[in-house]
Length: 159
View 1 (cartoon, helix red, strand yellow):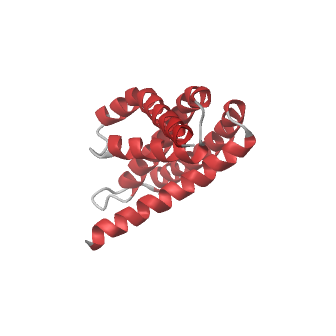
View 2: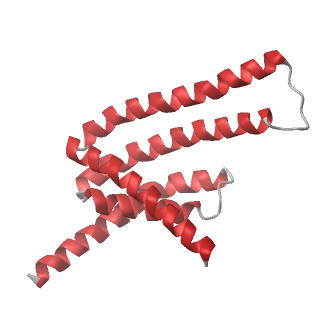
């Protein structure tokens, strides 16, 4: 019984290491894009969290993480573009014409549309590499991870 538990633990460690190896190039590229210094630590924690919650096999992890990482990258690109547009629109030192405001509002709206389209597109891609049950677990795990990180943030600010 003890050997079986140790074997299961070892499998999980191997899965996590495999996932970390797959995400490392993406994390480096995003770090170069001047992301927060804690991004790599955050990403590693998220990979570990999701891998454990989904109980991914090595084969599943090998197929899943490249798809998920691309999804995260594209989603982050949309969010960064939206933040850039919002910064420009809310800059009190900059006066925009009505036409520029309308254009900016439409561009912001389009980033939300693009993000929703990505959700639909990648939902189908996830279903090609994971069972429907694990895709559902993925969405649950992402919510749990956000809640976990929010609690960590609150705890850190209260200390």
